[in-house]
Image (cartoon, rainbow, N blue to C red; front, top):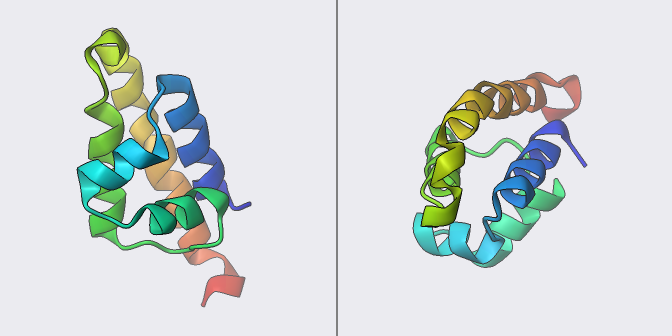
Amino acid sequence: MNELARTLRDLARRWGVSEEYIAEFTGLDRSYIRRLFSGEKRNPSRRVLVAVALALVSCPERYRKDKERMVNAFPALLAAALEDALEPSNR
């Protein structure tokens, strides 16, 4: 599993956001989200990353109290995506 997949899974798990919710929110196929979270799908577009990030912060009301923590986690999410994109094996 790549760093981006680990980061996405960790954030979604911590914040209680399901892959199904992310797929519904983003309009992406659930199988695509599953592949992204498993590391099978590498180097998603900027549009996909932004959509997934928005889905993570638009979680149900009970998680809104962690909003600041969620916002602070985005640099890690973007850094993981950049790191995966720059790996020599992905070129």
